[in-house]
Length: 351
Image (cartoon, rainbow, N blue to C red):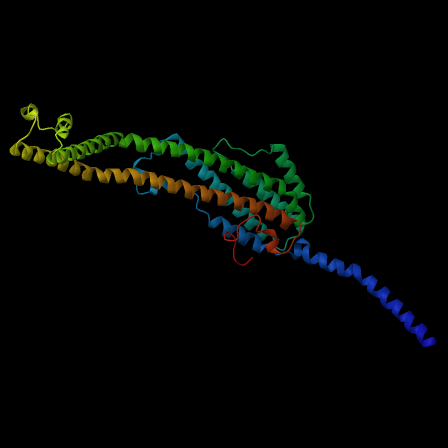
């Protein structure tokens, strides 16, 4: 009996010990997902952001095109505004890259967290004062709101808390980027309209002449067909042939029938006119091809530009969301850059 009582007592003590260990185990699992700032390696964040940013190529390339450069002018206001907006987008992406590098620099500096946050706040303050936009697109946060956010960053004793306090500025930067992209797309449509008009105006005389030549060529073909019908015995074909603009002239108009000599002269005349229009068509072909290729090139550049702008939007959104997840203390880089936010092809393969 005594040994059974001892066994039960040991069992109870073992269960109590196991129950006491559960909170510690839970704490270990939680800390595997969220760690204090000193334990989080922020280098993958900076690496990933810079990898995504350097992979972007969003410039509208009509100035280096084969055909469109003949129609485009930098003096056009829409072209100037498009180039200016691209410069603003470049400044924003450079700021995103520099900010991400600065986070890692401060994280690995060995400074106390409160000093890291003071330096982070100063970096943000200096950067935003230098980033003066030359467009009508501005930040929606007021000066007071920005200053309040910077003070909030300075007040934090934990580095990741400082990053989280900066999140309103990160979110507004992402929204600012979205507004630049919207305006870029609007200007792109206006540049497309400008280039279309320029192409049409430059080729207008040629296009009208080309239409006239092709109409005359069709008329000659019809006249030759009528002549062949007359040769085969269709007397009515001669009357129709006289009504075309390609009959020989008044000297044989009066005849109801043509003799062999007249037929020969008329045949040579029609074939000669056909040869003239064929020669003109051949000479016009290069101009026509240049006209068609300009439009094809414009369509291609618009499509490529749209695709690149879409990638820029994805990258900026992914950066702002990753910053939030990282500043919340998540330690797994793959959780910062969710594939729902950004396609795998844009991401660095190490994630």
